[in-house]
Amino acid sequence: MTLPPGLDLRALAGEAHRVDDGVRAMRAAFVEAHAEEIYAELTDGRTRYLRIDELVGAAALAFPGLVPTEEQMAAERALPQAEKTGREIDQGIFLRGILRAPKAGPHLLDAMLRPTSRALRLLPEFTETGLVRMEAVRLERRDGVAYLTLCRDDCLNAEDAQQVDDMETAVDLVLLDPSVRVALLRGGVMTHPRYEGRRVFCAGINLKKLSSGDIPLVDFLLRRELGYIHKIVRGVLTDGSWHSRFVDKPWMAAVDSFAIGGGTQLLLAFDHVLAASDAYLSLPAAKEGIIPGAANFRLSRFTGPRVARQVILGGRRIQADEPDARLILDEVVAPEEMDAAIDGALARLDGEAVAANRRMVNLAEEPPEEFRRYMAEFALQQALRIYGADVIGKVDGFAVGSR
Image (tube, rainbow, N blue to C red; front, side, top):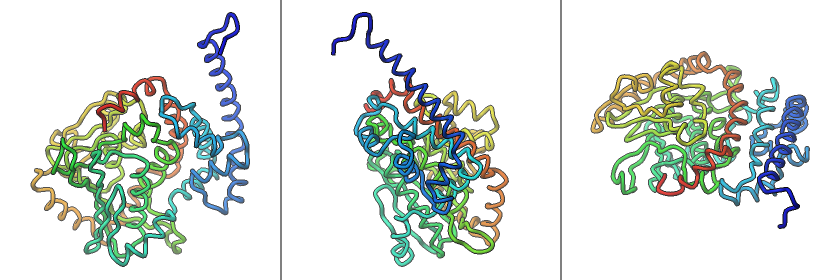
């Protein structure tokens, strides 16, 4: 293309950015002003429960120009992260406005707490056999305990959209199966050359998938927080009974080797966390340039503000055997003692009053309204972060030699 005299590509790019910025400002103002009406129309007066992917899809059809169309998103998904145009930012603007709305926001959270259709299809098989194998996880029930094992041994259990889908399915099955009383999450034995024969909990976000553009805002970054992790905290929403619409159960996590990024985020949602003494925890958000899920919301509650800032802003790694680790971990034992310690902790969680008390503790520590306000802002800020110039500059490096 021949540019007109006096113009250059940088000037054109700057002008395009200003146009995009102005349009997004108008879009944000429109959603903020009309979120309740928009949501009511999309959900037939809040009588239908649409998950976030269904909601943005419905909005694209009902309100052209408000969010990207499915065709636009399909084209975007085909590109590596560095070449995307940032259409997910518009989804973030829309979802922030909906989540902020006093009536629409809680209804959307409830929609995300309902069982997935995949879990409902698999539930008869699981209740009968006590075993379900998926690509990223294996779920087994023995003597009232659900053993959920992360088994992506090729990438040290690094998280991607497939793992989020499998994890939410497994969490739903645990909560819906009346034979399960308590659940354990642990990493499986690895075949990865660096950790062959060892268990690994989680290596955090799959950076290769982030580089290739396969870490979506809606189906990974938001679904993960509003879906299975929130269900671990709050329970799964059912038609229920007069005393509660939620089914929730005690959860335990066992950390072998390390819990990096999303792995450490997960620990903050569990009732009891056990770790091997040679394991470590980290939230490398500053290095990767993105927001570590709901860790900014939860970590200070465990560690206090100073340690939380050291971990999130400064990238501090915490060894399981150092004193500050006990602010996050309930027990630390020698690696060879993990199995026995797990059995003991599960027995303690399997008490008649544990479920009711953990429900009340979670309600007091993490009120739904505060979580909703955090997630509303997270929807936009994380969308902006994954298209930040610093993150885009790093993604090519993520693709080489990273998890």
